[in-house]
Image (cartoon, one colour):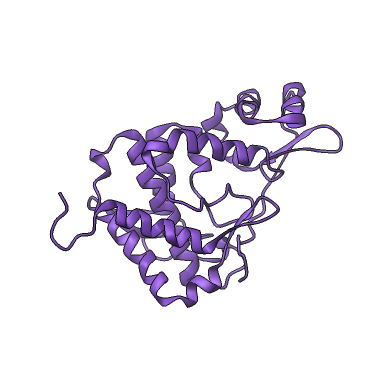
Amino acid sequence: MVESGQAPEHDHTEMFDALLARYVVAGADGIARVRYQAWRNATDDMAALRAYVRWLEGQKPSDMSAPEAITFWSNLYNAVTLEVVLENYPVRSIRDIRSEGDGADNALGPWKASRVIVEGRALSLHAIEHDILRAQFADPRIHYAINCASVSCPNLPQRAWRADSLDEALDDAARRYINHVRGVRILPSGDIEASSIFQWYRADFGDNSQTVLAHQAQYAEGPLADALARAGKIAAYDYDWSLNDAEG
């Protein structure tokens, strides 16, 4: 039951949907970018994002099912990342934003600073990603659900994640990323180059090149699928930390 004066859950989720639809732009190159300047200039929409994050802080993920909890934490991570970038915009990269407080002074990027309190626990973006999403759910597709505001990151969705469609949506996000050149690509030599995500978090995909390739092969299509079937290893990794800025 919704308490007096408290908006129902679907109202908050639909509010985040509206913000994402308004400011996340699907580029012709397959990369979703955010109209940060326009969003920052829209006072009401800045307030709406803050209100959504504050509402999420009031939820109780410990009582949620696994799909509900993954949805909750992924939406919170993405919303807080947007909030951080918007507060510090303009920046060339999210790594230019320094963490402050809680012993995280001058840390590269904003990930170590506490940003939210959920069920009495102060949490940073780092804690949400590594101590909760990766540690508790052991699903490699989590890496396609959260967005670090960078060009090489899996796309920020134009709609909030939802528990009832999460499994299908994560498979779709994995497919889109792996079949995009910033996820996995065939070099002129025929070797495979992959996003550094598959190197940094190799343990999540099975902790060796063969299991990483097998994961990628589940979602690969066309010539990439053939190349992965022939590959014995990933020859190189790359990542572009430039801000996913639509500049408009």
